[in-house]
Amino acid sequence: MAERKCVLALGFFDGVHRGHAALLSRTVERAEALGVDPAVMTFDTHPDTFVFGTPVPLINSAADRAAIIRQRFGIERVEFLHFTEETMRMPW
Image 1 (cartoon, rainbow, N blue to C red):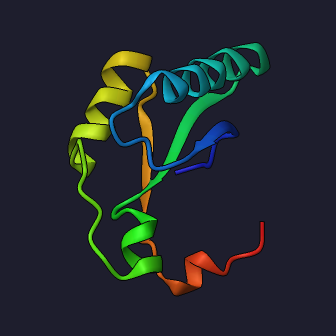
Image 2: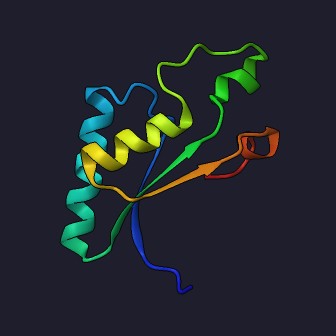
Image 3: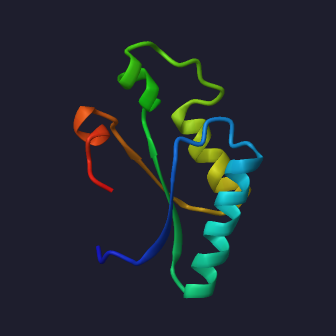
């Protein structure tokens, strides 16, 4: 399968609040303007769970977050990355 260019929103997106909604809406707008796909990269577990070693209570499961993003914003490409120490130390 050929890779397609995209505009990517990166974040955890738990609860998909108004700030998230603004970012996701802007992602869709930019993707449309550029003629590419909108996409989201998020994490399977909250980064703070790993960073601080304590579970973070979540509003939505990973599957629910993906469903909300797809249904509310029409972003079909929602990718999950496993958050590890290596992920935490990745350069920008």
